[in-house]
Length: 137
Image 1: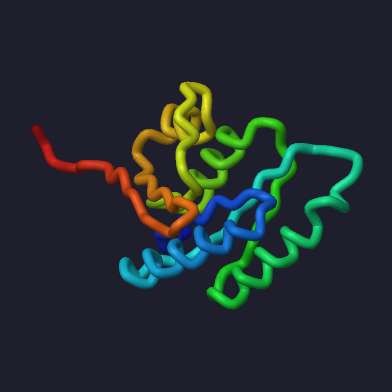
Image 2: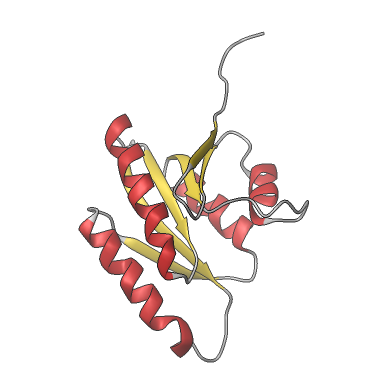
């Protein structure tokens, strides 16, 4: 059985300012000696022209950071990300900020993958982390 290197996953949307998420994830990956991966989950549509420039920009930022970028087309982003996490030895995801809703991406993702640490980066690049505590109580 092949053992995969642990990785940090930057979860980006179709926004230029998601470059902050990739840069923060790169720093975290470097600090922990992990591989950096970048993932964007887009809803299936007939026309991607409105997001193509943004995705191309984020792809270039990913390459500059030493990572490949994967784009998945799926209506259920939390499930798609949780499956990607399981298949790619991801120990931490890095995203934008939680929107506060009970059915938000992060709440749904955390229910599907509760053992994955989460780091959030806000618009002013402040970083907030929720780490899995592995201590025995």
